Length: 213
Image (tube, rainbow, N blue to C red; front, side, top):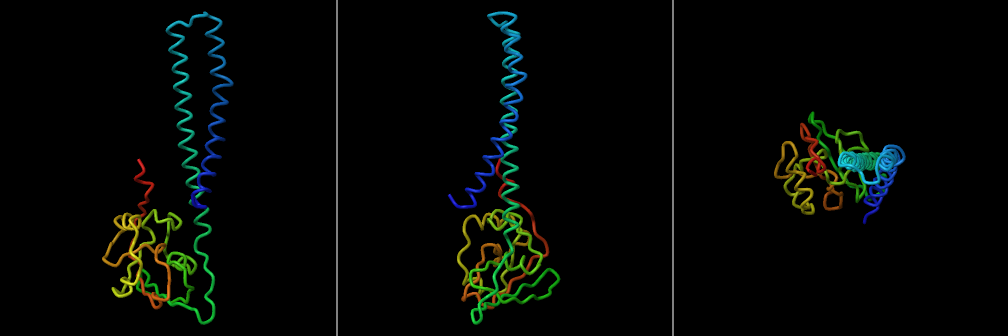
């Protein structure tokens, strides 16, 4: 399990246990106890109506627990995404003599030239320099909002092949081209020195989580 996956599981688990405890305590300590006392006081053998009421209460408790668990997972996902977003966009300046060059062409056609370090990805570079690249999933290859278009076929061919996950997200991208990539998956290397990429006119915020059900 990766560090990020472990953090997400820990956050989700803690939230789930806390919220589920609140719901269970409320039912067990109040409604369920009162209902059992009422049933025992009226008859040692519960009537069909009493059994029905008990069953309804148990079903309601189960529904509350399920809703609580789902809500905890959602809260954990949002917290995890926010944490990633806060960490994203930080890059260290390149060492003298080791600079790599990359150019972004924004939606208005303006060029932005940067000197970066080997290992920086395009999403981090764009966000560190206040270019309009959202990266809604925090760079986890789970959305298409860091879609970029590589200007040179030759440069595109020098890149590593996109993964299946990246291809799945690119299928959701607005204005997909033959040289489209996700910025979070393009890592600068000496082979990519002088890379020029274009930002699409629009992005479509479709995430992998939208297709989870």
